[in-house]
Length: 318
Image (cartoon, rainbow, N blue to C red):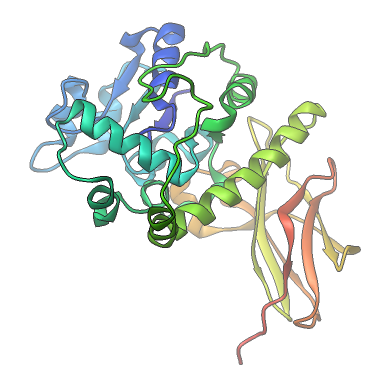
């Protein structure tokens, strides 16, 4: 099994990468930090930064790496390594961008102001762009910078590793220290990074749910309520890890058990991410509901609820 690490800048990724190097050894990690980066592995440059990149030949040329990592979008390697083996860390978006600004000033001789930096279109919503096109619920593991110790505890348990905790490449004396913002910057930052803020809030709710299951010694299910209308409820679910058994899903309407279904239907749109069971992980329930109702699903075997909060029914468009 090889891991794919989406290293989003200034999310404790360097600490994780250095810890992984110590555990796996640097020779077993393949890096993709861009064509001009000294850190990028030779095979990456040979196969992926040519006139005609050949991703399949690239993978075939590797000798059982423990991990591939880099400042790349999740879509770059998820179809080769599988979404279940994909990991990343997220951070409070405003803290992350302040940290990245300081990094640019210290290490890249950036001369612009903080406002000029965060106003640049390329610096907005960077976490969402890195994970675009993949549901958070499907990703093998999402850690939080602010809860790095707990994240590493769960990650090591999930992948049977012992990656040590480190604190590298920090702009502040301590990871838990927070940057402070002027009110004008705060308002503008929140407006420009609204999608990242929403992403982080949802990821935090998923993290809380997963950590609760972890502490209760219960298996985690990657599970998503995709659609909930007045006529049907649908989604997908599978066990984290190597378990291949289908999940039984309970539908809760206004907090009450309404129906059960097995997640065994084919979800073609997931197949590019190499989900388990060949993509036969979906469920669909015909229902009769009103826009005033709320729905939530529950994994019958463990009680895990998804989404983390009940969702109000959407009006069906005729």
